[in-house]
Amino acid sequence: MLITEVRVKLVGNAAERLLAFCSITIDAAFVVRDLKIIGGPSGPFVAMPSRKLCSHCHGCGFKNPLRAGYCNQCGAKLGAGSLPRDDDGRLRLYADIAHPINAACRELIQKRVVAEYEAELVRAREPGYVSRYDAIGDE
Image 1: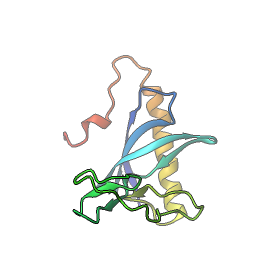
Image 2: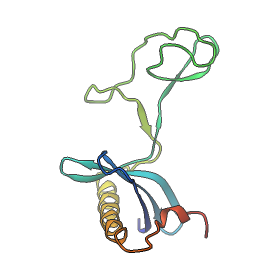
Image 3: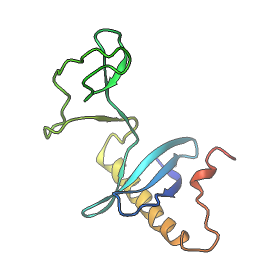
Image 4: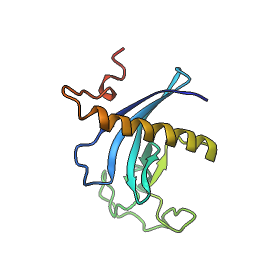
């Protein structure tokens, strides 16, 4: 697998843990968007694109966030069933949409994205800087 392009969009409020969004192009043929670059205790790391997990109302079938107490459609009280947890016992509120299958692939993506993030920080200091991330799909 060859990552042929990485585009980074820096996030304005650097005080938060979210540092940037990015997209990667694999083999000049497949794009994965909305990866997040997060500031961690040992430096930036890449979080895969994810979606919020939902549960369905027993009354009307409407999808509601897992922690919701009442249905957003019909107002029925939602059951306090067991919420999904990860291997460490933490609540699982999100699920990855796309993710690497093995550690080698994750490391490949991590190294390339973090290197591009650091290069984007340098480019952002130049006069007239414009993020290339916004141009996705304009070609």
